[in-house]
Amino acid sequence: MNNKMKNIITNILAKNIVHRRYLLVACLVFIQALNTDVFAKSDKENLLEELHKTVLQKKTYEQKKLQQINVLKSKLANQSLPLTEQFELCNKLFEEYKTFQYDAAFSYALKLRDIAKKLQDPVKVNYAKLQLSFTLLSSGMYKESLDSLNSVALQKMPDYILIEYYVLMSRCNYELAAYNDTPYYAEQYNKRGNVYSDSATALMSKNDLQYYFVKGIRELKERKYQEAEHDFKLILDKFNPNFHDYAMVASSLASVYLEGDGNRETATNLMIQAAIADIKSSTKEGVALAYVADLLYQQKHDDKAYHLIKEALNDASFYGAKLRLKHVSGILPVIEGNRLSTVEDQKNRLFIFTSIVSILSLIVIIFAFIIFKQLKKLKVVGTEINETNLKLQTANHLLQTTNQVLQVKNNELQEANKIKEEYIGYSFNMYADYLDKLEKIKRSIEKKLVTKSLEGIGQVLDSINMKKEREALYISFDKIFIKLFPNFVPAFNSFFKDQDKYVFQADQPLDLDVRIFALIRIGISDHEQIAKILEYSVRTIYNHKTKVKSKSILSNDEFEKKIMEIKAFELSSDTSLT
Image (tube, rainbow, N blue to C red; front, side):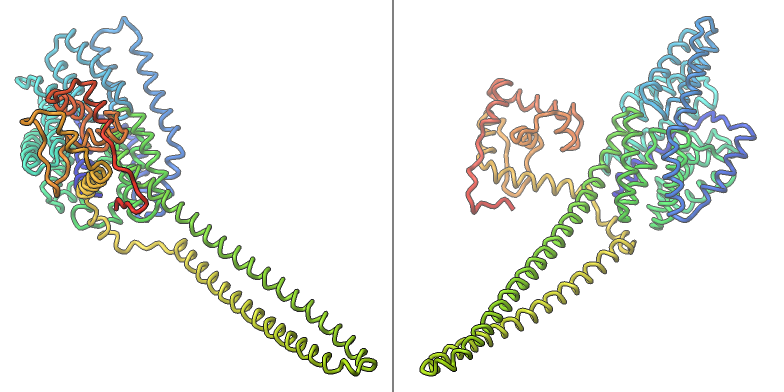
């Protein structure tokens, strides 16, 4: 997984933990027991087995959460409740929904804001704005989230409001740095995130779990891996975190190992534990499950990775935020494509094996038929010899002729025997070779099925650069497209005035504007699909199309029609696009 994906996952984990209510003593004991019994496991296979069992019980955990939600909704349905109680119930419902379902969380955040305004309580108004900001940030709506945060009035606010504000501003800047992925701007966003983190920790108590989590995230961003590892381990050892907090801390600690010393085995185990905790807390917006699937895919566990990424996709779809769905959807095609390729390879090997067996069987049948024919001929020749011997007594004058016939027959018989011997020997040699090939194939298949090699995984992972691969994909697309449509560029430029024409060089890729219409020319006209292919927003694609059409000398409707009329050259038998 490349650094961009790692940064996004780390930033997603930097969530709001202000005013966290700890569980009752009995729940703490129960969670501690789980930490000892489940999360302390270090063996990956045992953890994967536990994850599989937890996935099977997912509906049970979801049902418990829905029951809690229904109880709160039934209380809120009482219209005679005072506004303060309505505010408290809406806040509890928001807490239940904020990592479970985006639309519902957004709805209750708005209700919180409306009730707070009716109460004319500045603290509650700002608190509601922060909750709304959290929801917008979780869905990837960074501009809207910043607008909401900038509307918060910090004067005369209690510390927990200030802490909440600084934590969200820190997380927003960290996520913008990862999302932007441009070194110049990313550095500025990270610096701002660090400043807000410092402001938050300055107001926090060192006896608070959140203090060490925010501090650990900042250290992770600054590549202070030992300090970050210490803080995250301190949370797990001293604070008895609930399932949701455990998932965030374990995921962050896994990122420390991945980015720090490259301990992928420990990082994988921690991410599996985080995924288990996410499922038990019915967290749908988490990315731990998708991260586990990607790590298992890199370690050649294709089937397990495929099933887990499908579960992660179901969770992202249920949560309903496009950003979460985009993160998971980016991993799914890679895993599914590799899985399909593996299945196809197995089918091809099976087809080859079956073909070899069929050919060898046919050869054996042919040889058997030939041998049978030769034996039949031999029997006929023997009969003729006996008849000839009987005729010798009465046909002496035919002796010479008969001897010649016998000589010919004897020669044929020798030839037949020779052929028989050769065919039999060849048949057995072929059969022996066939058995040897079967044995080699069998051993090879057994090794591939039984041996699980993790060597070289680090080099494979470090060699993967999604940005370069995507750029290579675009360049490859440009070359192939220009070869298919050699007249596209001059035809495209003919739709503009001289001052608006696009300048192209043979060794340079297509301009983004031209590439959009190149995709349209080959039949991809849906804005959302083009946005996914080129990794831009739908609005960006729409704006670029509008800009190009506005400069054209053609009308908007005629422009795309003319694009579709640009002809490709006729493919001949010796034409190659490679």
